[in-house]
Image 1 (cartoon, rainbow, N blue to C red):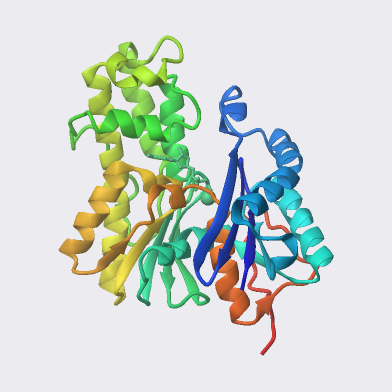
Image 2: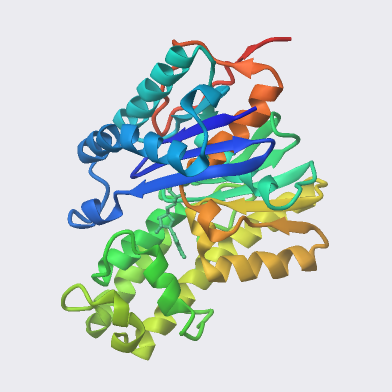
Length: 353
Ligand code: KG4
Ligand code: ZN
């Protein structure tokens, strides 16, 4: 079923066409440079930019794919969680296209799309764990199938990507800085005792990352020479950064990833699963990719981490999950609502069965 996927939950406008579980074509417009000037995503600017670029991107997508707009059989759109105004732009656009073409509309949970798109590259085996690590979320799920998903734990404060980005900001790296911390960390040596592994002295499966952020701030307050006096030329980042800073980034990344591993190991004591999917923007992190590869071998389970292009926000994941759910006979009506970050996403599909 040729499915158009539309992603506008944050600062990437992503469109894709997927058919039979394969990508037909994809386009992505990132607003990262626009928001970098402000040190974070400015919601008002983000939604205006989505509105501006969506029609042109759809034309480009059709051109790239060789498909005609009339070939589209289903319209899938991210309905949350995300920035409300940005979601509303995507939803309005999706509703217009589905109404104009007289085809079904289906709203997609952005977090489930991040996890389940892993199946595009490697076949997932259920039940499995789903660890979603992004700029807005750190959630641990039990995935029983593509449509039976149970939340096991989540962050109580900052998301792991926020922790990366805030530490990057403390040392004057541009937003979003997770990728720069990663680059420095890979050249550093881990000191396991430098930072506490956050929020592990409990019996739950939740996460908390605000404490380690404070620990880094305290460390930097005593080591002010490690802070760049002005935003560095990131092209020469490895050259410009002192070894001590690289070591700090490695130790920080280690502590974050360890706390994830401890909670995942705890969930494995309580549940029997075939493997773990790790997805979301922070799943691009090299420490995390290596650590979960080793961890899953040690626990004799499989580990699926999508390739980096599929980890950050994109339209493919929306189209991909849209087609799966659409083929199961699920859809929404034109009253489909956008759900902002912080509110649970209802399972309110209309079923043909
Ligand atoms: O999933 P995503 O693209 O957007 C959200 O839905 O939030 O995730 C973006 C987050 C940002 O916090 C970004 O800094 C982080 O992913 N990120 C990384 C890396 N690449 C992206 N964090 C650590 N290491 C990376 N290599
Ligand atoms: Zn995302």
